[in-house]
Length: 70
Image (cartoon, rainbow, N blue to C red; front, side, top):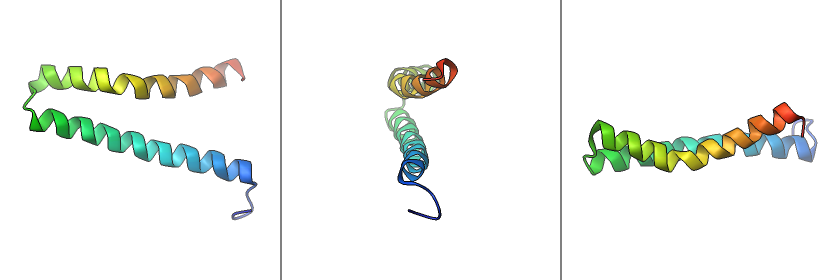
């Protein structure tokens, strides 16, 4: 299909690449929110923990699936 890749391979690569970009952008948004609200170090840590927990869960799902061979 695209550069000798099948549709499934292209979909897998583009999903991982674009999702990584989205996660990076979401981390930038959390950092910007902490900076603009003057949360301090402790408040920023809580913001990153609470708002980043969903992203961690998504990444952990991929790792667990690889380990279990699913």
